[in-house]
Image (cartoon, rainbow, N blue to C red):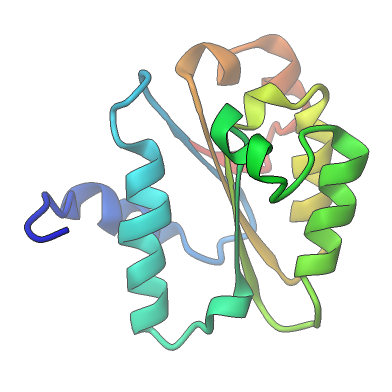
Length: 144
């Protein structure tokens, strides 16, 4: 695809929060570009900074992705899949797109973030991340 809007303001916000120890949450309405920002723009920026592809772990949990069998959409299966993709102690950037589809995803995200070698980014609708459960489980561990 040639010519697209780079969204420099949002990209700079992600860059400024890189490796800060907190989960980065990208919210917005459906089809507003959350996945594009993370999966294309930020991923390209990381690659340009020398981060190897095998240290960028990206999982899309939407219906199309679950049909391809990339990673299961259940907490235990997703956890196993992610652990397999995080192969060594090197810094890993984990992108979870559509986390609200996973029951109990807050605990999964908390566990990923506590691994020490991960920088975790998640996307989803505003309504999901404003709920009481999410704010309680990730309190002090996330940045919106």
